[in-house]
Image (cartoon, rainbow, N blue to C red; front, top):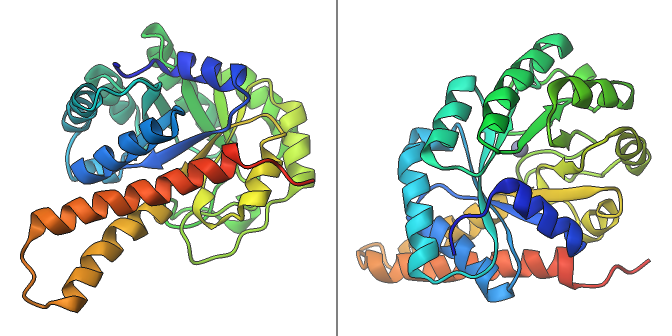
Length: 284
Ligand SMILES: [Zn+2]
């Protein structure tokens, strides 16, 4: 199967009552593992990469590689390639031109009016090519953001409707107590989430999924949540494999074997996340 357009994937999520995991890639092994995990679970979702991580390769390398892996592995579940934390209009444009099928514009560090302006500009370009846009309102703290003042940390429900209407964004990343990375133990603010969900004309996105207890993610799902991002969990599985191999043998050089094991370990982590957020029944 080819990469699926982001609007098609959103439709698929809605029709099947799913919250779609979005797994962050960096390189070939991560890409292979993520795609295989979706296929193994027979459920679709997002493979994504941030502007920051794209500095190691390029939008063209990542898009070509993902398409190639999808075809070679004969993948038959819907997967979109998404730009995570697109930091500039140029990044958004270059990813769409390279064949990404969904994008995020992250200008949440800017004052409200400037955030609106940046998202609207990117959305005009993306929509011309039929690509949906995720935007962020409020700042999600942690590693991916380094400019989030505390006062601006949570999404203001009063701003949500106006922001979505004016930017024309298709989904909204919210700051409701979620943080990037693994070090902190986040507690989602469900009262705020409910207010934001009520105010938002578009589905919501949760960043920093890795640290959030699964029962909280399943609860959040009931509030028009369409996508939840997982980066750190998968990266940890990947890196751990190499660390273990080195610990066992300081002269280890069988890169193929260790890389193959790391792919398997990332598949295992990704499939368990997919199971936890969509397959396990909500205990209420
Ligand atoms: Zn994020």
